[in-house]
Length: 200
Image 1 (cartoon, rainbow, N blue to C red):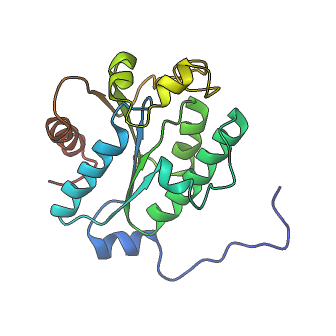
Image 2 (cartoon, rainbow, N blue to C red):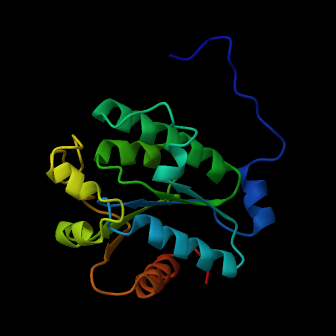
């Protein structure tokens, strides 16, 4: 509920002015997929590529934000929803700053991802579904989380005993199984350019 004593202050330098200064379109590129699908790896490589093309970016990663902004949250369904709500609001602020924001979160629930989409202007939210089969995610499993979940040491683990709601119509649907990360990012970047989200 909004406090009646709080008002929104309009500033002389707005999003349009910041974007013009940076000569880029503000954007939130939202990576979603199972744990181990490659979200963080691909987001990291894409940010490097965007930087090399003169773009101004910021990457929000699932593990990193839980060291600070979301350090008070657990992994219950309620806490996961709140985690994504906070990230969505931060992403909106970074987009308002004129940046291209990359986020790498499992974000298993469609409603939560749509929450962020609805905060932004049209064509500012790019949902990137990293579609990696769960058996490959388990083979990668850099943190050993799937093994712990299979052993019952981790409860409500996405893809095991908690659902993952795959995007129905993402802006970009990236199959990522056998190709290298570098090849996958080239494909991703090409699609972003072809669809007019970023300039080459």
